[in-house]
Image (cartoon, rainbow, N blue to C red):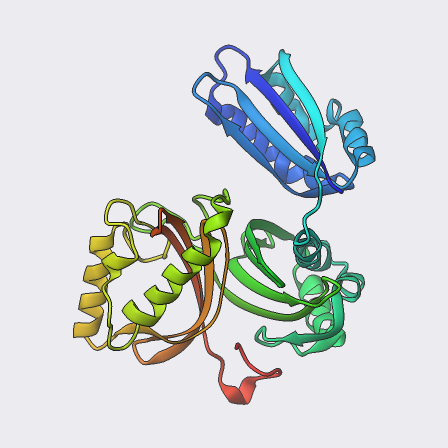
Length: 360
């Protein structure tokens, strides 16, 4: 069971939120990842009265205690400590009771972070995969040896691998992860979206992914990974999945039978597509112009839809301008309508170049 460290604090007089955020980013990027047992991220929020609320997850109370003992003297924490009013700090810890979904998510995250980010390739893939490991990632063969063959070379070629797991959702035996990768200090930046199937022992048995260049802000000022992350409305999971399925199979088809406004909010639609502005009206206009120019975007087949509360993820075959793509789309819904959208697409490889059974 994980241990949640919960901290509240206020800043010294005159310190701005921007200054503290920069110092906290140093702690998150340099100090925390080096601490044994730090478990996959932190959550930092503030409220109007200047109270900061921070939550960190650790594998055990022992790991938390060791980190606390080292925190005050670590070089990466000094700027942070200089900005905080120590007299206002409070800290408590809570034991997190694992849900049945937790081991599946943990195995997928650890395959990513231990195996790829930390370079412990063979040990990670052997620990977190099951009796089979069917692979759909371009260029990666099936099985443990296929993973090792590909990522041993990747790790050697790319000594600096900064990977942030941005969003993760679990639906039954399926786990989804969206990640941002910075390779060799900006030499390459990718957004990756991954879907994992797991067995009865919560081990990974199949993997699909889409990888695309991670760019800057789009016309609406959003990136491919920023925006909402908080999961809510768990009781609406199936209803929200049904909304997304209808959107893709009725409105986003070659000959639509429904309009976008049946599924997408006319008041708020935040679009993280690299080329798209916000708003339902902008989406409708983009679709109209594409269809008139013969560059229609549509989904001939939806392969998988998973959801967790207000978030739904689809994995589908997409056609745009006559070319085929593998596409992951992430939707955030409020009151039965889509309020926010992220996507990630990858051109389907030539069948002659495949080393596995293909993207789907």
